[in-house]
Image (cartoon, rainbow, N blue to C red):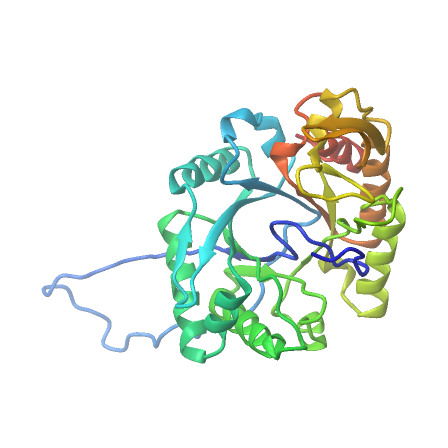
Length: 354
């Protein structure tokens, strides 16, 4: 884990997700032998590979497999237009295993009932990603498993969480190939879309091409285990991250999605066992109007934890509205479910109805 993160490059259980929106339609027809078919039937419909229309301003929220979806109000689902179920795991063979598949069904149904797209987030070890993507056959097999899982579970898309491809070991090249091939498989006749962002591995070809539709930028986890008084996700980091990706790297504004944290981190001490959900911070008398609080957990008494309160979330939401095209929250289960909700603060600021 990095102690000091570069702009827009953080760490959490799901980093820089790549999202694929998939829509599949199947029509079947037949005729009896006694019917007189057209003697000059039309040829096959040409296949085109084109990105579909986007969803407008994105509001993306994660639902981990260990969270009870019944504990999250329907209203919190209506606040999003994309809900990512995390996670399924990739094996080196390209096979994927969905954690708690029964819960995936509940989350996907709840998302759809409330007007949101349902996505499957896939993670796995760096070694498994690298092995799977190292050959064309491996990538092809993985893509077929992904498409099969989407169809079987009636999902709208997939979120790819490869931590982390890099130019240092050459996996940036196989990552690019995987994303291009996945995009081509899903963009048939403008039926789906995907997006992603990995700092070292993303190329100008992906940034400026039409294979990627939007990028989730993790503007958080800029923490230190040695330096005290460090906010892991302040407003300046959000500005720096968007400036880097949009202005320095040339990411189209319409594809930039700003990540927001629903949890807090301490500074100058270990992160193990000391991070807390935003809702847990409020339960220890933290203020929704502040970005820091004094909390205690087993083994650590009265330490300062840094988080984003509602005012900062509102400022970041307006920043995303002016410089980007969406926000992403990790994750729904860490947010409050009442008037102090961070997602509610964001949607109210953006004028999003729910």
